[in-house]
Image (tube, rainbow, N blue to C red; front, side):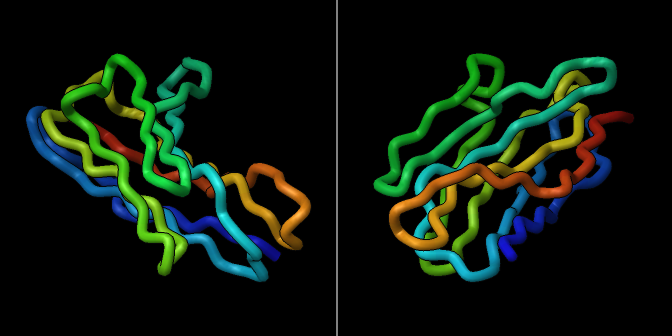
Length: 120
């Protein structure tokens, strides 16, 4: 069984910072892309940032310059460093990973989500 476990969410004031982590576990052959998505109140889930195995990253326009995605392949972990947080960043943040169990397969997995609330 593959599990993605997020941590690091919480309550932060506007202008503050948080670092999210997502660790993959289970019988994993390899992890290709990893990324973060978010779903705000009454909104659809949207892409925040992704990172490929070799390091190429992709960011949504609304987080460019404020958020940084990184990964530690040895730890099977992806991070999201968030700074200059604003109330509109309030959402449940989900980790996603494209994982191969056998070397010839590939599918996406989701974490359970971690709440980020930006408020005074």
